[in-house]
Length: 171
Image 1 (tube, rainbow, N blue to C red):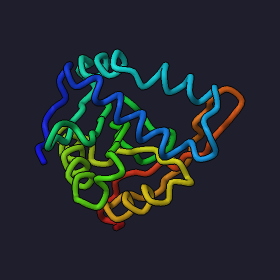
Image 2: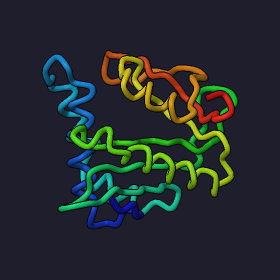
Image 3: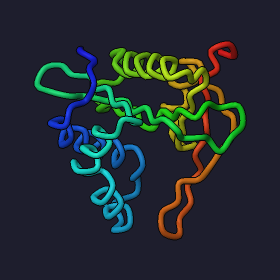
């Protein structure tokens, strides 16, 4: 496994992984047009190229074998909707499910926490769907604590997300 900054030519691989993980994690009862439209409008190679080019976005990829199997995205100037968090968000940590349990997610997260520390953010934050028990347990083991909640809104739906902040002293 090699961790490295994302490059523009990684955009289509990042989009494919994002679609695989997002659909597999959140669409448990079939795929409605609303969610399909969201995926194909938001998780595109062009969207990832724009993120890679943005100096306030930091994307690290995990690469091995034939390509990328996961990535983490750290976003600057993103205040949380909860007190006690820095303005650095761990916006995305996606890993192909078949690679879970191999230390890749932990390696990506540690690199993301180092980037956050380098940016002066002692308590970066993230959002996780309240029903994603696997991710919530992973983040708790890594030193994240729940500090609030928000909602992911799409058309008329609202889906609760927990806001977690990095608090290794409360682990």
